[in-house]
Length: 64
Image 1: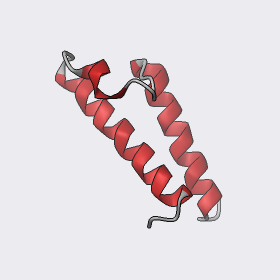
Image 2 (image 1 turned 120 degrees about the horizontal axis):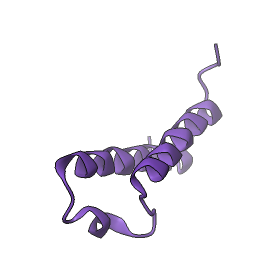
Image 3 (image 1 turned 135 degrees about the vertical axis):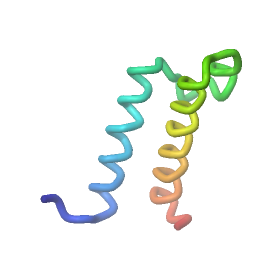
Image 4 (image 1 turned 90 degrees about the vertical axis):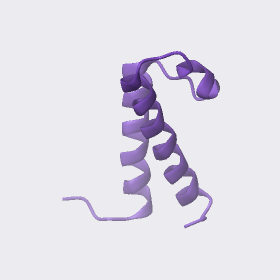
């Protein structure tokens, strides 16, 4: 079992962000427009994707 620390949490988040990018073809530089006319599953996946990125950024920039 890995220790709970900043790096392990960031690695976990990066892994899941990369999986969502691969599975749904999300582009981190494209914003919400890439799902504007999509079905609900893709929109929900994008919400998860954005949330994971927000948590990663909050940890990285010590906003938590």
